[in-house]
Amino acid sequence: MTEPIAKLSFWGVRGSTPTVDPATWRYGGNTPCLELIAPDGTQFILDCGTGLRMLGSRWAAPNSGKAPETHILVTHYHWDHIQGIPFFSPLYAENNEFHFYSFRSRFLGRDSLKQVFETQMALPYFPVNVSAMNAKRKFKEMDGGDSFKVGKNKVTARWLNHPQGCLGFRIETPAGTVTYATDNEPGDAQLDESLLELAAGADILINDAQFTPEQLATKRKGWGHSSWLEGAKMARQAGAKTLVLFHHDPDSTDRMVDSILRQAREEFASVYAASEGMVITLGAPGDRVQAHLPGTRTALRREAQFHAKVCGVTEGGKDFEEETIVRDISLQGALISLKHLPRLQSELQVIMEAPGPDGVQAMNLRGYVVRIDAGPEMGHVAVGVVFTD
Image 1 (cartoon, rainbow, N blue to C red):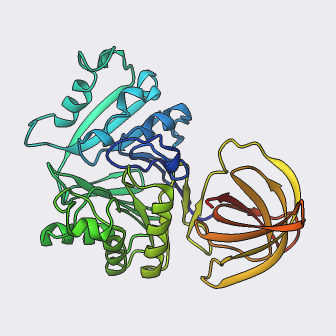
Image 2: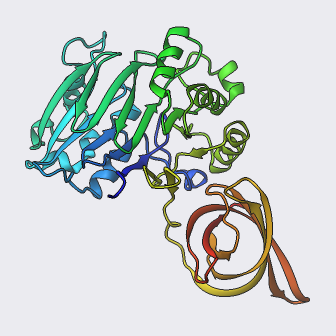
Image 3: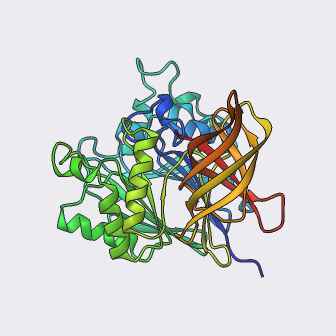
């Protein structure tokens, strides 16, 4: 019998506002949206930021043996978590059905989620109103502590510490458990306990990491967000297996997120920084949590034959150094064949020998591991690297 597998896809990982700055290109600039396909085919969408448009453009209706239904969990009503709704093309197709879940806001009262949905498309904010959407839509209000089942999956909600309210969600599937806890600030004992309950024993804990510990302690205190350090502490306390740092600040460049990730990995063994296009599979035999990053984005690639020395850190956390040949290179990165298996999202130092006017010269480059595939030779892996320096 095959093992039950769940697939978690990251369509938007940025917090507060979208970014198109080239310095944030590698992790991505769309605001929060995740997709979880459970082993029984049930499709969950977590939040409706601008990443929702990207999901819609690559839409594949859920395949659970019945009419397609999708369950959308909305953590709260701040812009960055709802602004993709009008641009989600599957909402305009009448054969689709969507179940939306969120809480009753004390500022909006009854049917809060439905109000947010419709008002966002009201005059003068949008050129067409909600009547243009032909898909079936159902809205359900939840409270902290509520839970429900969809197929073989259980969803539980808990309150988190964020201005105007926010729900965190725990989704238990036959392949494992995913906890989605964006937009939470530590410091409220009762709500910290809620987060601990959500994260207890989770295979994947997706936790807010918008601010640095220093920012959280001073000028960003009370803004409703967390840090990589608090996420590592929570993952350790809750017994979570893998931590994903999420809701990156719009002012955090890729290099800043790289630094945050390195620090987090010193505090907790299994950590990833959420990246647009990243897919995590859950429930695979052996290593139950496996992360895959997208191939490098459009680049002019050329075959090459450069001798190189590569230094980095293996998946097991050990330093390595080896001689190799770079066979494929672009202005942004390279594809390198290695005997060692480097850690995904780790940094490599690549020293390449290149001909120059005074003979062979060494090019010292730093790169970031974005892809690992089977190599062209037995015992080798093909490592995709984006150069950062």
